[in-house]
Structure formats: structure tokens, C-alpha cells
Picture: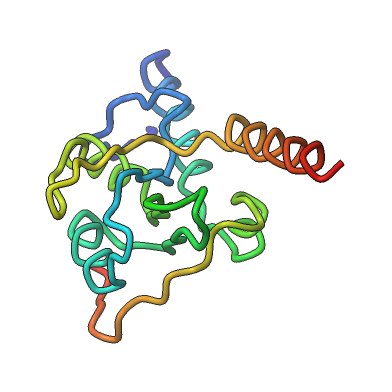
Length: 48
Length: 113
């Protein structure tokens, strides 16, 4: 496997790690406890 | 043979890039529809947290599912005009942020003495 492919593999793992789905608990632990609340999406919202 | 598919926009991402733009200078009583309309165009939103008291007023965290969407929205929406206020878009840096909140708690304690 060429160094260039190795780099691509390492980069892809990095992105996978940074893009792994976040659980609600992780979200709660990420943000300050007070001062913010979860904004409910409008019923019409459809994720693209 | 190792086959590697290169996704779109696959440049190497600097470490501070993450999926949580921290938005400042929002109009105070912006509605959920407006928030999801402005930020939803760039990608699937995992969650939005909006301010609830006066010292966090006009700020919000918008968590995206995909890191490239977050990067695109920050590149595009910085300085965007909403109700003649210019949006400030930064990547949320948890370490810095928690330090700021700890300072506030200390100040509150001191004032209570």
C-alpha cells in the first residue's frame, strides 16, 4: 500500500471518527448546563 | 488492492473544525422555523440549542450531522444579514467556553459574599 494510500486511509478514519453519530448524552455533556435549551424543530422541518 | 473513494469536499480538515457552529448576534426572539430555515439549507441538523437568559442572549449552537455541512455553513453564513444584524459564526470550542462559564460562576459567588 503506497504512502499516499496510507495517508488517505488515515484521513478517512479521522473523518469517520469526527463524523460518528452523537448521542443525546454526549450532546448534553458538550454544552453548558444553564443558559441554553433545545429548540424543537418545526413540524414542517425535513432534514435534507 | 485498496480502493478508497474520495467523498466530495475531501480536503484535510484542521483540528478546530467540528460539527457545531456557535452563532452569535442573532435577533433575540428568532423563531424555530426561521432558525431551521436559515441553517437547515446546509445539511441535516442534529440539534439546535438556543439561549434562555440574558447573558447568553442572541447566541445558539447548531449541531450538524456532517462535519462538511458545518464547515460550509460557517464559510457561507459568516456576516449573513438577519433582521439587519450580522451573524457571527465560530466553531464551538468547548474548552474555552467552559472556562468562560466557570469564571462567571466565580464572579457570581464573589458578588454573593
